[in-house]
Image (cartoon, rainbow, N blue to C red):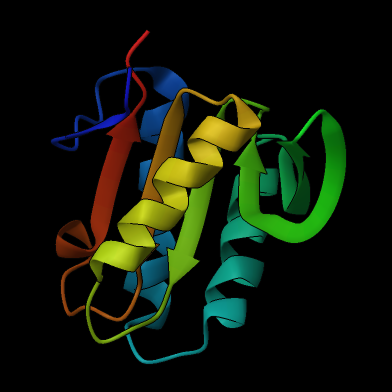
Length: 134
């Protein structure tokens, strides 16, 4: 089944809640308008301070025609090997950004993804959660 977009539900599970709370903390501290790399650095710091395992720029191999290829695809953040966080700092989220995280979920075999646009006045408007149906 194809992943579907669902409303943000911070009570879904403790890890999702901690990730979202960390995103809120970073945005409240920094505000909008900075580079994606700045938000990534601060979010990683915040997650590690909460003793949450996070991997930055995790390479995703591509399975194609019976071969494993390194196509240079990288996840911004992989949280506890169970949540992909794709970071943006753009004027607005486009369909290509949503397609990107949906493809990453499929290729990585991960169920939950969070697409974050830090370049918004209110961060609640910049968070989209994606869940791949079982």
